[in-house]
Amino acid sequence: MSPAQALNYSFQKSSTITVGRARYAQLAQSLVDSINGGDYPVGSLLPTEAQLCGHFSVSRTTVRQALRQLQDMGLVSSKAGVGTLVRAKYVKPQYVHAVQSVSDIFQYAKASGAPKILVTEEIDADASEAELLRCTVGQRWIKIESTRTFTRQEVPMGLIHAYFPPAFSAALKLIIARKEPMYTAVETVSGEQIYEVEQEFRAVTISARQSRILKVKAGSAGLYAIRHYLNSSGKLMLVTLSVYPADRFSYAMRLRYNPKPTKE
Amino acid sequence: MSPAQALNYSFQKSSTITVGRARYAQLAQSLVDSINGGDYPVGSLLPTEAQLCGHFSVSRTTVRQALRQLQDMGLVSSKAGVGTLVRAKYVKPQYVHAVQSVSDIFQYAKASGAPKILVTEEIDADASEAELLRCTVGQRWIKIESTRTFTRQEVPMGLIHAYFPPAFSAALKLIIARKEPMYTAVETVSGEQIYEVEQEFRAVTISARQSRILKVKAGSAGLYAIRHYLNSSGKLMLVTLSVYPADRFSYAMRLRYNPKPTKE
DNA sequence: TAGTGGTCTAGACCACTGG
DNA sequence: CAGTGGTCTAGACCACTAA
Image 1: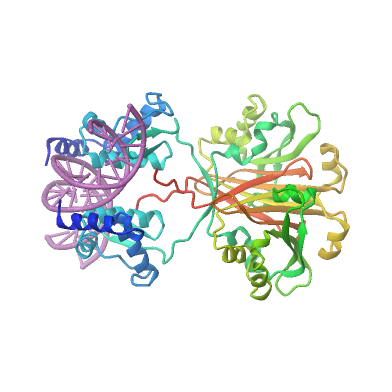
Image 2: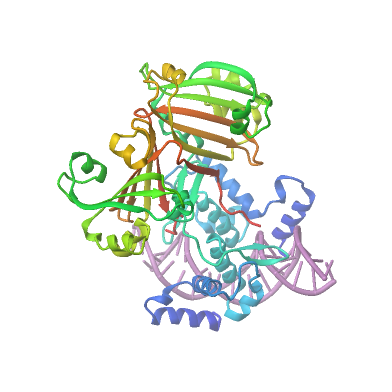
């Protein structure tokens, strides 16, 4: 056992609170304090691992374990050949809404039957569609109009318009014949995974046409959900636009503070 | 250089795709495959680290790095004196909506001025309030009615009802005098951090009374947001109930696939 | 008490980055 | 090219858990 290690362990035994911690944790805390204090400004490099080994009289393993903790906190990032870059001065606590899959974004999926396809067509985007689809006017898209119905009920839960690129037209068959959810159909046909989903909620007044399909009074309130599905390159894979009458649907989410799994 | 390491490196050089990976990554993949395949059922223990060292002819450091990867994936968890427990058969991909603080839950906060307090009172929960506040009828709460206004505008963005326990009545002063946001005032007064926020959106028809305050036509559509703020014990710290006219507010969120910081 | 994972050391080779 | 972080080894002591 090296002198430094012996010192550490005896120190642990003779103390009570602060010092029962592992040396890498102490080192991590020390580094966090230094960054918080401005010793290492954002954009600068931390001392090299070798230097930290010397300053703190610990092995490189211990230094690296401390640095990994700082990386997990989002304070620094390391790059071979360069060094350890300070990315933030403070740890930003995160509230996180985590869902296990895209399907979980739609909590109702389990409680509802397959969507009922009303219309499928190829369209050339008009001005408002171009904005929604983030493209130029006249661009071609496939459009599906459908409803979702509660299991064993006649009244539809919501009216859904979906758009995807003509390149994925084979998805239509999967959706209609195999009754796959639209996003999985698009993933299958494109061979790409949906990487990001943007979701927006607002209230709208239900139009006369929508009200007939939804069997609700025209002019009544509806929840409007716009969803953009993107691949990892940021390319639009699917856009959906849903209207839910006030009493038939709500979207609930839970944001938790720092849910990072702790050691056990 | 040990024979095993030499073998590894020569193997890396002579290969192209699969094998450029680090040994710990290969080992991790192998373990994931075994768990997926049912070799180690959920609830069972993985071989000990020493056994894995032997089976795969790697050092314990490498084994532990592989196991850490599995822990990050949520497949296993380790406990000193026990072993490495299999917790899940498959990696569940996560889509995550992360916000940096409670204030980020309200994107509008920056664009809007301080809330305008209309009424503050102590109430005994009636039936509908008891449901909202998850308490028994007659329980006492402090209620604040307020509006939020766009900066430099007269028309309110939304109407907000907030409820918190009488024990936090000192928060009132902070909210009114110091214009603190309600959730920080409650955090300050209680000395506890808000750990979890439940958020629900639905559409509603704006009532006559609400319409007068919001300066909007009665019967028009509104976005209804219900938020429950809980501490780490699950105790309700604050409940807010907001109504936003259709054109004045929308809630947007972005869900990303596995946003875990990758190595750089 | 025996065996597990948690921590730590000292030393090594590698790929990558920049001058 | 020199120096950085990325990976790996062999060996050690510790705290914890269960028998």
